[in-house]
Image 1 (cartoon, one colour):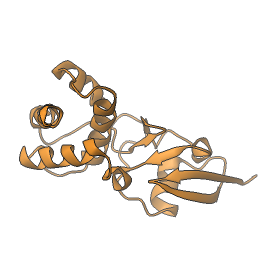
Image 2 (image 1 turned 180 degrees about the horizontal axis):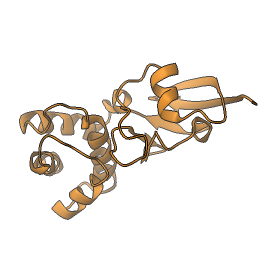
Image 3 (image 1 turned 60 degrees about the vertical axis):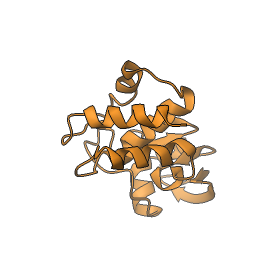
Length: 155
């Protein structure tokens, strides 16, 4: 099996490593690079717990091969903390008690960050659409939607 040398920016830092053609980005992030916010959930792209930003857009890292990250910019929740919207979202999620177990939190916060970076004044429908690919088994989504709405309204 031919190994591939890949390079990408991970949370603002250049990363170079060797991967196999079949290595999944989620496994590389967690296993080789020690990034823990993207979680292993369904391994089918259905639950959103493995969500990361690749070049500013959310992707399911369980469905992406590591070689696809070559030359890209990958941001996980660990690296998103410097973004304006992420900090505001985390504060509002805490105030609204929007998470219980927190397993889905990184994926939902990154999905909401992508939304607010594109549209700082989203409608409730836009918010629900943006987080539709992220499953939360604890909250019923209302506190999550409210937290995103409040983060968007705060100046």
